[in-house]
Length: 602
Image (cartoon, rainbow, N blue to C red; front, side, top):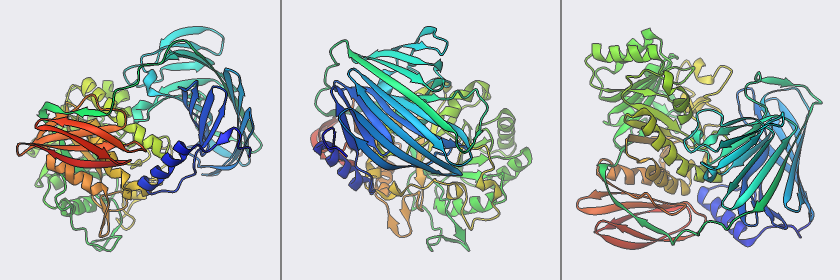
């Protein structure tokens, strides 16, 4: 490989090493490739942060393969070669019956950059998607957009400001827009493309992808098939860039409302004879937070065992009960089982649509009233904000409180994806409150998806007969992330709390009480447990908030015993010195990369 145009620049390498250490992982260092005004980072198989003249033109381009249940086929980069004008990335994609060989080629041509993708299918494969995807940065929201269609006609459009429940653009052959003084044109070939608003899933992007979703899915692709697609990016500087933000400063002020209630979820790991898989008794949360959220899989025979376990694990905390997949008969059985318990909230969701279908909602309201239960009925979805955004119009109008959950890794698993999701969490929280006009309960917030919301085949939890393998996330492929035990997750969780604690959000819950997706595993407590203990300390106290924190810096605080208790997090890969002000005084705070601190002022 030539090192003349493909270089490991020191700042990029240093940031990568810091990130690996903080997130407790070993990842492939990015390769920086540049030519004239163009620069990009090759992160595994992803062409990331493509800039022209130092300004971001495209957030990402990559070739993806998704199986019949929308699972991502894992890519493995087998070779990278480069010269002055060309970068070539060879990728193998194997898994879920897929055996694919792809080549991604980047060629510079002055003010244009050509990206081509050729994929050879080595074995028959049932796919939901196979082709190139382009990510546009969320900062383009509100920008004017010209869409050229496959027939040659053009129309004026806009990147939506509000998170769009459905595709903002269809039948795309080219896109033209201007952002931050940079005019960018993208021309697509090899397929018809369309766009979706990935902020729905807290991805920091709009995504333009190949093959319209209106076509039948999934599709069998035969061995020997070859898929070829291309994207040409052309850029021109048309104005000066925006002003550089001021120095790092966070000012917190009274919000006039309390910090939301804080909770964790019931553990889903295996239990045999009253013992969790780590050999410890299911002995409770030690009172972390204000409540324990438990999803009862009423479409299985194990829901009673799940409830019994949660009661023990709650350690005296009240329950937030989410009933999944009940029939009208089993809904009554579940309500009978929880009627005498300390229950804060109750929701009921379809196991198929994952939302509070009208018949379920009506039965839930009637069932609570018949039993004289004071628990608050909650509707909405057990899945992503996406489902709430897309189905709110057909959900019962009398739902008085709504719920949804969050995972930052619906589409990608890189740590950049996780970090960038925090700002999108703020957007979905604010929009959920605006659109429902009700109190909102957010959670569980988890690193990975607890279940596959878009599966077309039968899921593992529907086959459960006992808890010997666990339930829910424990039996869902790819639901566990090794970064759960990392030091950086402490900072990420503080940042998530700061992002989500907007007016109208009444409760937030994160992770599981214990196990590999929880606050501790066995006797070992993970760093994230500290974040939950900090948040539990300020829950319900008068909130101190900021609406103008610097990029990558987040803070949430409360007035406790006459002083300001502030939790501040740095999600950057470099240290930050923050000028922090709150009622009672000011303090200069040094934050190491991917770290958080608890500060008391006054």
